[in-house]
Image (cartoon, rainbow, N blue to C red; front, side):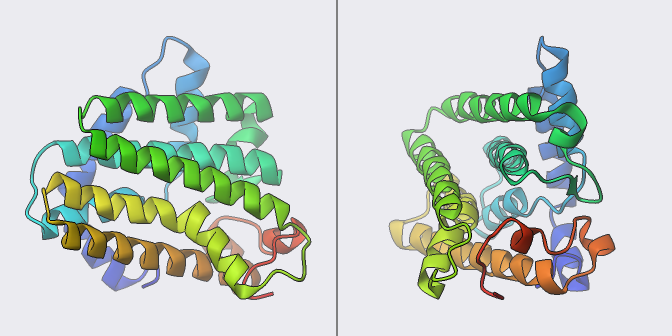
Length: 245
């Protein structure tokens, strides 16, 4: 399902009010005594995007009948973790354009981007601790660690033309699909679902996240730069061996 397709828009419309509540949480938790922290964080979070990971958490919560306010807090946590990875990735990749405008590192410099990414990670962990749920903390701590491993593995694979399809899939399941998986799993935990439902939700999230990244990698070769808001061919220029290659 394309991110800008009518069916996607109709699905996201189901949680439009919920996303407004998530936006309120995000705005309130970006507050910092250090002005630059809030400025950089707001810059990248306000850049747009479908917020598919928090949307998945909200949609899955609705499907499982959970209506508590913790879904808004955890959706914001997921978005903070994702945004932190974007800040760090753009520095590592030396990217200059994201979602149609200069990246945070292009605007504010690499040090500010890295450090504000660290702030978002730590703020996310503050918020997950507030849930007083060891299971929630376990899921998100594991996801964050796996994402970091995936990013390092991708770095190790740079310019490696011998990378196999299975090796590629292992990387994207770590660096991209893991947070989708965690988002869906968290909804099941909030809804106090039985283990088999939690596992099914996690499997769905992983499959969705994997498909999302494969499509994103294809669009790097065959997309519309204006529609995507980023430069075509960045993956190839950076030496990333993806499925199209």
